[in-house]
Image (cartoon, rainbow, N blue to C red; front, side, top):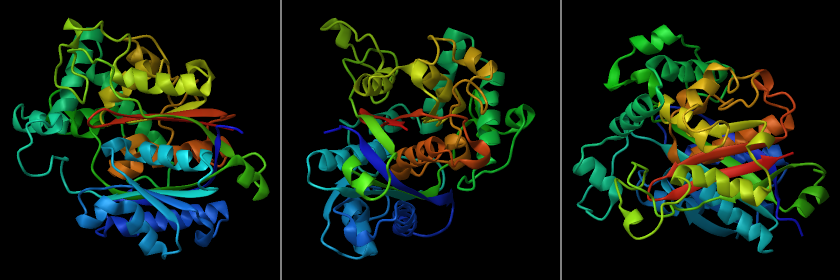
Amino acid sequence: MTDDVAVLGVGLHPWGKWGRGFVAYGVAAARAALTDAGVDWRDVDTIVGADTVRGGYPGYVAGATFAKALGWQGARVASVYAACASGAQAIQTARAHLLAGLAEVVLVVGADAAPKGFFRPAGGDRPEDPDWLRFRVLGATNPAYFAIYARRRMAVHGDTLEDFAQVKVKNAAAGALNPYARYRTAVTPDEVAASAVVADPLRLLDICATSDGGAALVLSTVEYARRHGAAHPVRIRAVSTVTPTYPNAVLDLPDIATDSAAAVSPSDRTFRASVPHTAYEEAGIGPDDLSLAEVYDLSTALELQWYEDLGLCDEGEGAKLLRSGATALGGRVPVNASGGLASFGEAVPAQALAQVCELTWQLRGTAGARQVEGARVGITANQGLFGHGSSVIAVR
């Protein structure tokens, strides 16, 4: 028995601001994925929904919500919430069903209809909630939090505003080639520099928007894929959903600060670096094996941090790697060939799934003008609030 699961089909609803409910976006993505897989909805054994908690009561039962919208047919159902890691957690749940023999075909769906402006915690007092604390006590909205990271990189590693702008330029160029992206216009460094300051040093074009969108995957056992006529499907080889290991006092979401080193030795890796490392270990590969990566570029500075956390370069050398052209289309290991969140914006439960959709198209060789030549191995990386890791490795 293999631990791989097959990606039979993928589907996206284009990102944007469409004025509809999240269910409509998820159903559209699900139907596209089923069509891509050549699988009838009635043949799906399990449906896993990545929850959105802003859409009212149905958002808390996303799996059943999507099952109802597609038409009750008796499938098992699961719903997962892990903030921005919800999609990866949903993939992990689907994989568990497949490898445990509870299902042969699983549909995974995530969708969101995001509010205008930055995300914020729901109402009420929750002093035990680190996300609530950083908003209510520190006043650290997401843009402010991104700016803290950017300032730290400038102070510690010598990154510049020009480096940050170049991340946006790179991702906008890729996004311009992606029909599912919300923003499909190339930008120049001068345009980034001229955009409004949101949280110094970050400009408007340094920070991703909030968006509506949906994504879906049809996953199956490898044996089912072969019977279904897919002899060499894209496979998911690893899913990392780890939590922090005694995080240190350096700002490392989900913790504002800790002093665990007083009791235990600090971990060798930050939380974010541990997420892809765990996936590498499970898949039996390393950074040198990668063809491409899709990472969580909430801000331009955070993308540079992911280069280092993924092991694409040494600590502090993210900007140098960017300047070399290695992470652009045509480079050694393109990062965010989809255009990333810079081009899509955040549709929280869908974005980790959308990353896997992009890996699938790239590994199939069907990504069109943004195709990474000879793509064989891809990784996704992001994280969710409250210590949810999120990394998926797909291979062909």
